[in-house]
Structure formats: C-alpha cells, structure tokens
Amino acid sequence: MNTSPATPSTTDTSRMREVLSAFCTGVAVITAIAPDGSPAGMAVQSFTPVSLDPPLVAFCPALTSSTWPKIRAAGRFTANILAADQQDLCRRFAVTGGDKFTGARWAPGANGAPVLDGVLATVECDLHISLEGGDHAIALGRVTTLATHRPSAGPLLYFRRRYGRFFSNSSMSASIASASSHSAA
Image (cartoon, rainbow, N blue to C red; front, side, top):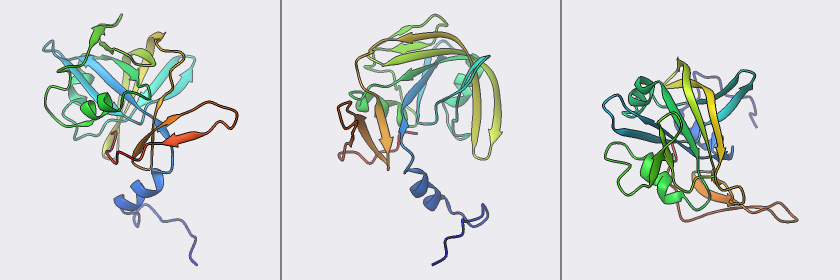
C-alpha cells in the first residue's frame, strides 16, 4: 500500500476537498457595508484567530466571489459567528448573487457593518491586509470590537460537507446533522 503523501502537482481538487472535510470547522458570515451603501455578506468556514498582540483574525474568500470585492472595498467587516440553529442563515449567505439580506434581521455594529440577529458572537475588524493565496485571498482583520450575544448557545459546525452541532455533556460528544450536504463556503 502506498502511503506517501501526494505532492501539490498530483493532488486533485476533489481529493483535497474530501480529505480536508475531515477537519471540523465553525461557520461565520462576514458582513460589510459596500461603498454604495448596500449590505454585503458571505458564509465562510475559514475564519480563525491569528494573533492576540496585535489582535488579528483571518478568513479566506474565493477570488471568484462577487461579495469579496465589496467587503475589501469597505475596508472593515464583522465576522458573525453562527449558532447551531442558524443553518438556514448560513445557506442564505453561502449562495452566489441575489439579495442575501432579504428577510435577515440585522443592525449596524460599532464599525457600521451588519451584526446579524441571533449569532453567538461578533468580531468587528478593520481590514489589515489582503494577500492572494492560490484561488483564494487571505484577509487579515485587525479586531476593533468583540461581543458575545448568546453565551449559552452552541456553535454551527461543518464536518464532511454537513452541518452539525456540539452538545456539551459528560461525554463531550458532537452530533452531525445528516439533512444537509451543502457547502458552507
């Protein structure tokens, strides 16, 4: 049996998706107010803390995204960390095009970017730097405001192309919802 790792030149995208889907992530919706004054937002599963000093976070939007240029041009954004009961909201912001904010309740945060109703927490940022990394950008945000909105709610998780939720009990188990195979990002 060949167990040697594939080199980047021999790794196909479907195999990479399959293998990396074994890494469980949380889901966030990155929001901003575009230069034309309209709200913009996109679901990501690539949101992560980077540094405490200075306070930095990152997310990785696809370069083909029609929303990313609006967020980049805004120069500031809010990462809305989704709760387990927000699968529908995630799906709304995971699609390309259309008015993703129709029917979504939100209010402007301290930086003006939309804070979505019912999220676990928000991280408001100024865009610090954006770099290209293959077919995605790597966006670093300098944190300006942090807020916890639902401290007792669980997170929306994404694992093997399905949504799930975390249940805290004596066995610290996680349960994956089998109803969805929709990509979060």
